[in-house]
Length: 299
Image (cartoon, rainbow, N blue to C red; front, side, top):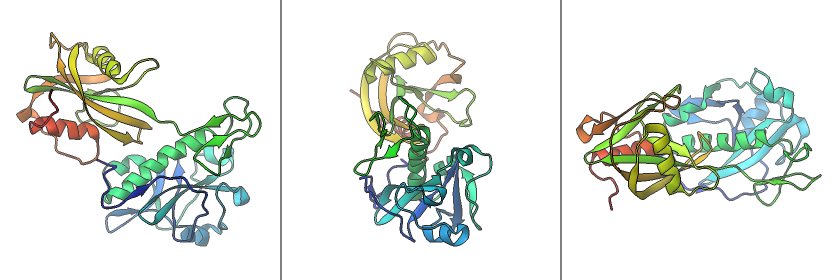
C-alpha cells in the first residue's frame, strides 16, 4: 500500500525546524502540487531552488517575513520535508499558483496514486493532507482570531481564546462482503475513480466501527451482514482518513438495492471474474486481491 515505503523510514515526530537549502519544499495550489519528473520519478523543489528563482529568503518555521510560511512536516530517512504557502488569503484563493519554477509544473495530487518512487508519493499526499488542515484553520473557529502554530507539537492555537486544533483524521471503513465464493464490488457514482471498489463509508458520531460496517452496507446496497472481522488499516490522505478494512459474510438475501446517489453499480463477482490487478497503493485493492487469491480473512 502507499504507506509501505520500507526500507525507507517515515518519521512523523514534530520538530520546530527551519528548512535547509537541500530540504524538500512542498507547494500546493488547491488540489495540485509543484513537481518535476527525473528519470520517471517525482521530485520536489528544494529551498535552494526556491531562493534562486523566487529570491525568497530562508525563513524560520511559521515566520511571516516575505509573505511565506514554512511548516516542518516530517522526515523520510534523513530527508526533511516542509510545507510552504503565502501568508496572504488573497494569494491562497487566487486562480494563479503562488510559485512558478523553471522545469517544474503543477500536477493533480491524484498523480500520487500512480507515480514512481513510493516514498515520494507517500510524502506528497501526506503533505497535502496537512496542507488542507493548515489552510482550513488559518482563523479560530470559535472567535475568528488568527491562529498560531505551536512550537512543541503539531497543533494550532488561538492566542485570544486559547482554542486548540489538531490535525483532523476521519475514521472510515472498507468492507469486503462475502457470499460464499463471491464478493460484492461496486463503482462510485460521479467520481473520477472509475474502477471497481468495495463498500466504504465514514464512521458517524456515536457508533463503533462494526456498527458503521452494518449501516454503510445497508444504506448503499440494502444487505445485511454478519461475522464482521477486522483485516488491517491504512492512512489514506486523499480523503484525510484512517481506513479500517473488514471482511464479513452476507446474512440473508443477496438481492442488491442500490443507492444511486452513492453508487453507479454493484454486483457479485467470483474469484475468476475479477480482472483487477494489485496496484500496491490502496487497502481496497489489496482486499480484493486477497479474495481473488483465496486469502481473505475468515473466522
